[in-house]
Image (cartoon, rainbow, N blue to C red; front, side):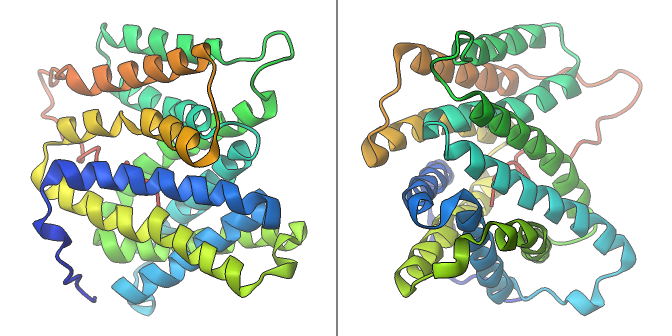
Length: 303
């Protein structure tokens, strides 16, 4: 495996994580700018395909040496990774960036709450639910219903991604595992890209935009999150990651001129509060069985 030798590990953990969040949302803003040219499906193909190339070049996983147990972990991880990105970009084509990320956050939040079994977690579910209710188009106006469904399905895939990523981390180092998973994700979305025909008129300029998208959304955040994970407790990591919906909303305003209504900002705030609360309140370990959970932060980032 090729080891990274950049000066990034010298960064303090908190700035590294915040830069990672900003990089992901900046990449999403670039993606939305590419949608009019190649569509959401074509942009997904560009982003995942070029991300796979970059990560394979960096980590060079020895695919022929993978065992059946390793492939059994990598393949479901990659399929879910591809589906998650495709569904998120489909939602992003219909919703403002801040709302799409807020709705997607519900998936891993519910996973964390269901895993903890604390009475207080009912509060976090209620807060997140209230946020979703606020942006639901009950009267036919407001947010796009299909876009919301895509975002919530992407969130469900994100929750599955966390579980499958934790499973994969037990049989493979994170770098080669993610690189191989991204290759599987590319194969997963390729049929949708071919059917859509969105990449039929790719230009050198679009390839450059796709490369920038792949770097901002995959290579840079992956490296920065590894820096943060080495130095931050998982609870602090998760709390800081709760800022992502707000960063997404601000990126939407600055880069895409997407102005949210007051109800949208309240929804973003409620989901952020629920996510931070679920991470902030310490869990009580079971009395009889010692806790054996993996670090929840390590597989929480999206690539």
